[in-house]
Length: 379
Image 1: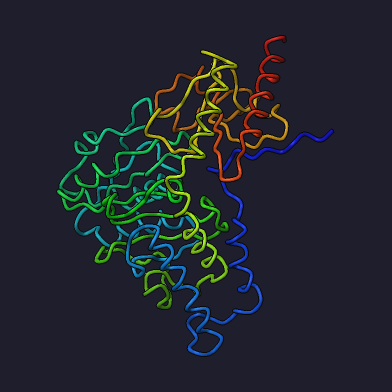
Image 2: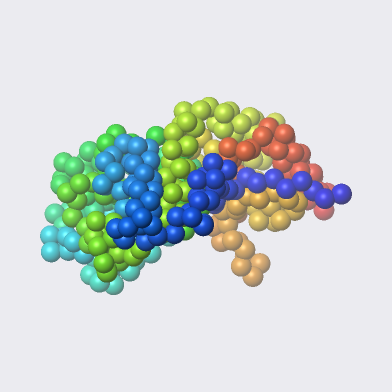
């Protein structure tokens, strides 16, 4: 009998919501005009893009003109970081970020170091949370940008963005947040967060892959990421991908009704209770117990290897926090920065829940985990 497939990797990617797919469908056949063309075929395409821009802006609480459509979270992060550096390098060359950022932030910073940028990579505590005082200590007269993720993709820890953004504003420093994991899961109103730049990734909130957005506060100096014609008000050249953009817009519209819904949080906490009941002190929580995304549960099985457990969890899609290379186990940079001991970190597994997750699925995973670990104990 085939094992039921259970998807608990929503932080990696979501499915396309049915309403999103329905909204995209006409743009596969009927509305094919270039949105820059001023005729009967181009006008509907242009209006569709502007409607999507309004939908994204409403979710973020900003003006539609402050939204630039991109190819995804990675491009948005690259544009925010590189665009700020190239626009302000005469003013200063110092950027502050953290050790637990996504590679789409870390690697652009590494690239800019080759061009003369000075980057400070601030550490985090054992919960994966940065101390605002450490950010403050890193600020210099040459600091032009602070880039800090809103919520961590691996452990779900939410950062004190509001407090740090106030500090940035006092020093006249631009502030960017990578909100790929938080948009659609928790509130991400740009004025409440106090950010100048914010990155969105479509496939993290039930939109298609290959589309995202960058919020750029009006008046923020930033160099275009792609140079060419005057698309996106001259901020991102290239004919817009209407099909994916309308999908992102609809996904943002839908996301508003899920914000504040306790359903996923309750399921996550019940799942954690099941695992504690089954494994007691053998299972450890990674990430902040309170300041954490409502859908994210990163746990470690002490003294075990998460990838080996996951490989035996037939049909369960989840992620591990350590990689195996030639018999050795290497912790992720996030767990390493958190100071997680290797004997704990190597047993890490991230379960991330979504809108379609059910308690029946979670009970099934808990039972499969018990079977797998019992078999390993008998060896």
